Image (cartoon, rainbow, N blue to C red; front, side, top):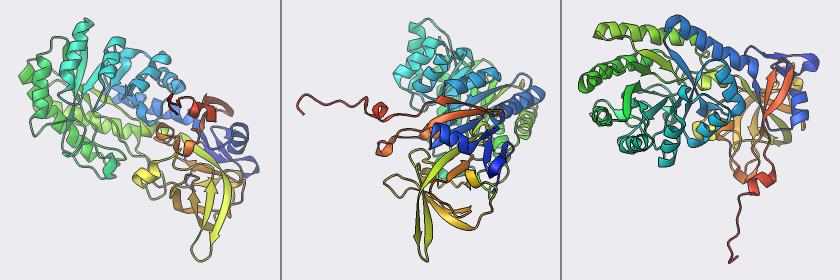
Length: 436
């Protein structure tokens, strides 16, 4: 079983997460249960911040909150000196509720509602990322009505295809995200923004995809974006000084995956390429901004389930039923995501066979067909590592199942950071029309 630092087999052969016994966590908080290791999480934040200070002292690191967000997470990100990248009014509201400084927030989105744009301007977010032409006039109208000046980045589509699942490629020519460089759409946006008295174009942004383990596409993105920055500066007469290269840095989920990207290598490679391209093009080195999300939280999280059934089909396979599944982890169904697992209460035992782990949803809900485990028993606690990103964030109430709780583990202590939903929470918004 592949275990990252901080996940250890301890007393009684139990799995320990952030110094906490996973079996005791399951007993105390119930399952399914997301467990976040604060020690590991803060370590990843510090690694990016320290690398940025060394390689690009004027640079910034913004956490991509779509990977996992709650008020406690906002407080951790603020405490580590990072900014926050949000993509909805809900994420922005969470940041506000947590007291996150708005000047360190960037507001993204390919189809922002007018209400979200107004909210972002009213609270004074540091940057709004323009993703299409249609939002520019409304952004100007809102800014003017509130007598505010809004810093704007243009999200560019650099036409770069990467080696990842098609559902998470975001920088290719055929993408809903960003304005095209080659077709002239991005330059049209530059001219539109230049004509808006309340908008300041500070730089450009791109995000080329997720689960990328090769730095070559990032270098290519820096080249393409700095080319555009020089052109945009000529067109507007103003220097663009911020270059945002997004995130998407690869994380290891199974033994088959490459190792998780090293924050030092990521920052150093992109920073040096930015300096090289700036020197080659005779421009001032722009401020570099990165937006890591998955790489910060994925390996910090572990999902705990209770085994509820064993179904052996002779000559075919054995299904191990657990009390969660696609409602708390839709990544398997969406992307064909693969995981490894172990029995948290028997973590010291060697695997004796291959098992399919089936979820409880009324669908073909299978978390995987080839988990290597000791012979599972009803009541065992199944632990799935690398569960911190895009699981709680994508969880649903399918089959009217409550969304699980999230617990933070910290040097042997644990505490709720998101309470488990109750049945009454799910039904509270139901309404019955008068004619029924």
